[in-house]
Image (cartoon, rainbow, N blue to C red; front, side, top):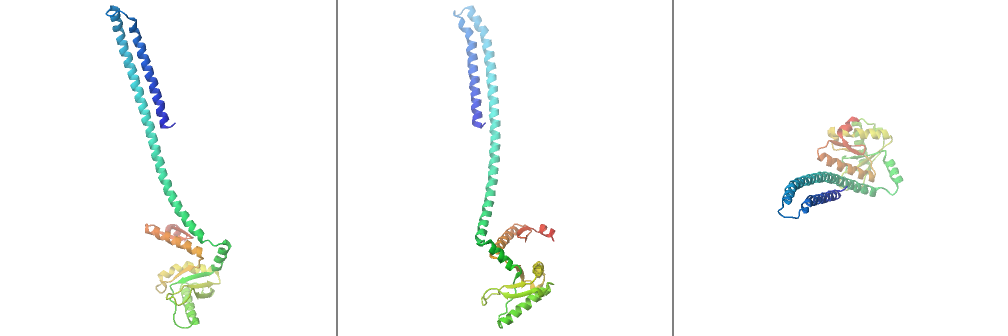
Length: 268
């Protein structure tokens, strides 16, 4: 039952009580009509006898109506309080749902961006990842500007082999090393190294974090060879990592997710 229906019921009861009140008044006044002679003793006696009864009856009815009215007001007030609390609760829940919708909208927009980068063929993406599975991308190694192409290539191979030796990784598993992109851009191009054994490649990636503690390799970074879609995912993760660290969270990227560092350390 709504508040309006409840109030209507109470008003109906009030009018019923009012009708009862009027009916009682009419019944109380009827005895006085039987006296026809003015100033007669009978009439004076009748009035003197009826007035006290009339006063008591009216007082009782007045008290009853006042009590009933007070009870109705209290019931309405209680009902209104419950409705107000319910509305406040609904408004609070609506605010929570609005915030959840904003978060979902942001996730949906991010998903749309990622879907736009999906290759036309999922099989093509899988094949591309398989081709890159044995590669790593090395950045921060200065590119030799002098000498012929063979001499520059030998210089890169010596640097990478020395890097692997410093990390205690088997350098004999490297099958190919070459620079990515066109020369002459004025910047040191990235190096791509291909491994014969996938386990050796994984070992190198695990030990790459040690480079920051080596003065000779502090500016060198080693990362997996990612597809376009994977690079977009990595970019989104880096943005999330930067945002959460800016809010004071101690987080890292692990297995394609931004997680608390404590959880990461528990697995190592």
